[in-house]
Amino acid sequence: MNNTRTKAAVIGGVLAGGAALALLSPAAPALASESGLNLAITVQGPATLVARGVAADVTIDVTCDGVQDPEAFVKLTERVGNWLVNGEGWAQLPACTGSPQRVVVRMMAQGDRPFATGTGLVTATASGCDETWSLCGSETTQETIRVTK
Image 1 (cartoon, rainbow, N blue to C red):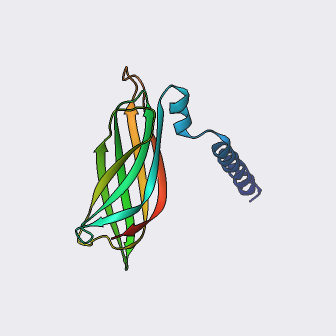
Image 2 (cartoon, helix red, strand yellow):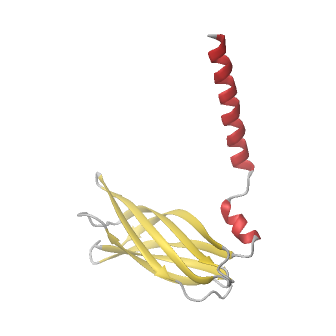
Image 3 (cartoon, helix red, strand yellow):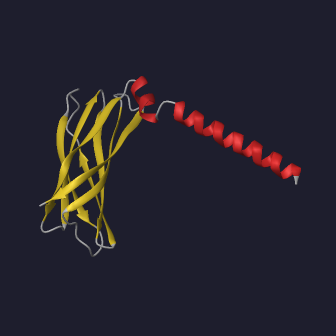
């Protein structure tokens, strides 16, 4: 019995220490920035319905410098009634200039349910590699946005 309490205390201490380390450690995108990759992504709301909800357009701003063949992957999840409606889209980004560049990414609703006006969760990721293709990285953001007609 006493041995079980000791094990539980040790496991609890290890988990608490790991959680503190995770909170105090820099996020992965900082590593890409320190190594020379400059990549940032921002979601611009609202999302706009296309063809009565068959698809939705999400606008993103991507800032990058020294990144080859940048691309973006965007996912929209929206609750419509008792259902979750998902859509994903991909876009090849223009050449990096160091200034924000606006891109619209279209996502087709997957399954039998269309998107609708309301609120959705967008997960957007921009990725690319340096000029020598020796370092690749990505930056991800997640935003709650309105979905409008």
